[in-house]
Image (cartoon, rainbow, N blue to C red; front, side, top):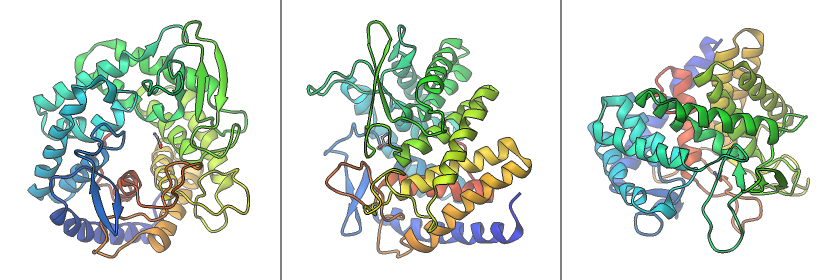
Length: 376
Ligand code: GLY
């Protein structure tokens, strides 16, 4: 249970967030942000409208609208949602990340006011996601081909976070196929991605014709067999969400195993590295992993309750307090919240601002204050 002191702290952070984000949104109109340059958002509307993170700004805006009822947030969220229609009309922009794009935008909008246009968009996205299911291997294909390597048999742990689009579509349409595909993928992920110690693989390659598992790839982490921290959090939060949607205890236990591994690996300073198995001399961090883990741990804590629930909640609080004190820019002149986010270990650039880090930090705080719009 949240202590009164922790509740007061969370309310204080919520107040800081509403103050800063009002200033940020007032000067950041009509944009699709991913990262910043000199503290200001770069707009991806023309640069890369298909990018997988383009729904998160919508998530921030709908959360702020739910919290404050300020129409500015709704107007901006609707602008972003319409911009993503270009993606719906381009098959190369549609992939397993349809969940990340349309859950925080159209589904969030639909949850708020049962908007029929939003429902239409999200069901189209869900149908496309369901269509990526490989019948032989029982997995959802992650990406399309970009002309370099064969991606027909690739599945990734991140996809666990996209399954809620299918659970939502099953509820809204009454068509059980969406649910069946989500569960079939979650079962494959549970069997193939989660290692004995509770850590998870990032990418697995299956033979797209026979469905046989071929190999594990290092993906965005340090190496094959290592432990990319954001991947651990997609698994932790993703299996928790599959439990919430299905009430299947196997998913809950899987989420708990991943959580135990994650908690055991949090460094003493509470700051999350890019990979739990990166060389000791490498200090690169990924604050997004801390924020996503906190969201997963809070939901897990509610699902489990009791003493174990307190362990998950306290781990989440530790992560969030560390971010608040050391990694959030509370300066109203910067558009971003989280510092030191990293997209991938082997990228040239590390430790910059990334929009989904900001989204999940906001979501985690609102979970604690009871003001969250449940998006997943
Ligand atoms: N889904 C890709 C990532 O987490 O970077």
